[in-house]
Length: 444
Ligand SMILES: Cc1ncc(COP(=O)(O)O)c(C=O)c1O
Image (tube, rainbow, N blue to C red; front, side, top):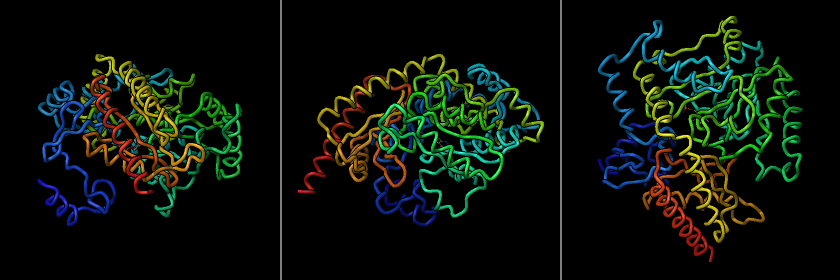
C-alpha cells in the first residue's frame, strides 16, 4: 500500500481526528507495516528507530519472542473466557502482579485500557471513601474515551468536550521550569497551599481522591520536585481523600525503578497500570490495598469488561513481567536514562534552543525555547525537529500542554542497546541543529 492509497482510504473512511488520519500537515506520516526489535518498518521498507515505543506500549520492544510464544500458546488453547469464572492465566497474572506491587498494595482487578483502569480507580476511591470530588493536575492526561477520565485531562483542553463529569476539578501542576511560584525553597509548599485553598472552595461534596502521574508525560515530561508527592499525600489524607497514582506511562520499570512512585517514600492508596503491561496486548489493572478494596466492595464496587480477563491478555501480562524481571529491564531503563541525559546535556552546551532537560529512566523530555531568558516556547521548532527525525529514521513525538507543544518526548524501548541509543541521539542532534539552522535562515 502506498501513501496515495492510504490517503484515499483515510479520506473516505476514517473519522478525521488527529489520531492517525491524514490531515493537513500530517500527510507525511509513514504507514507502518511491521516491526523488528526496536525498529518499525513502513510500507516502502524504510526503517525507523521507535523512540516513542509505539504509543508508549512497546517498551519491551516489538514482537518480543517470549511475548509472541505466550500469546500463541494462549490463542491455541483458549481465545476468550467468561469473567464469571476464573481462568488459569488470569489467576497467574493476579499473583505475578501482586508479588511486584509495593506493599501494602496487593489486590488487583483487570480491565482493557488505561482509561478503563483510571475510571474504575476513581469509582473505587469514591466507594471506599463515600466521597465524590476528584482532583487532577492541570497539565495531566488521564484518558480520552471515558467521561470521567477525559474530564480529568486538563492539559489538552477539556473545554472541547463541552461537558465535564461532575466532581472533577484541577490543581496546579508543580512545573518548576515555568510556574510563577517556583524559584525558592518553598515552591512545593506554595503550590500545594494555593491548590488546596482553591480545591477546598470548589468541593461540592465530600472529596474522594486526587490523581496524578509520577511523571506527567503528555503534559511535557514534568517531574514533580522532591517532596511534592509526600506533601500532597498528607494534604489529601488530612481531607479523607485517597491518592491514585496513574502509572500508565511510568509503571513496570520505565522510570528506572519498578514503579514511578518509588522515587518518593510514599505508597499510593490506589495505582493503575497499562501500556506495556500487556507487552502489546491491551490489558490494564487497578491495584489497591486489601482494606480499601474491601471498603469499596462493601459499598457496591464492581468494574469489569467483556474482555477484561481474557486468557490471551493475561498471558501477555505474565510474559511482560517475565521479560522485565529476567532481562533486568528496570536497571536497563535507568542506564538508558543516564546515557540520554549526558547526550542531551552535551547538545545543550551549544544548542541554545534547549531550555530544559527532564526525565527518569527511558522517559525523557527536551523543552525547546526561542530564548533561554524569556523561555518563549518554540513549538514550531519542536514540530520541525520531530519531522526531521522522522525523515532521518527516528520516531519521536512533541508534547506539552496549555497550547505549548514544545517538548520533544523520547521513550526508547527498555531493551534498546547502547549502540541504538547512541544512533537515536545522533539523529536527534542532527535534526535539532538542522531545524535551528532552518529557522535562523527563515528569520534572516
Ligand atoms: C498517563 C496516562 N493515563 C491514561 C492514559 C489512557 O490510556 P488508554 O489510551 O490506554 O486508555 C494515557 C494514554 O496515553 C496516559 O498517558
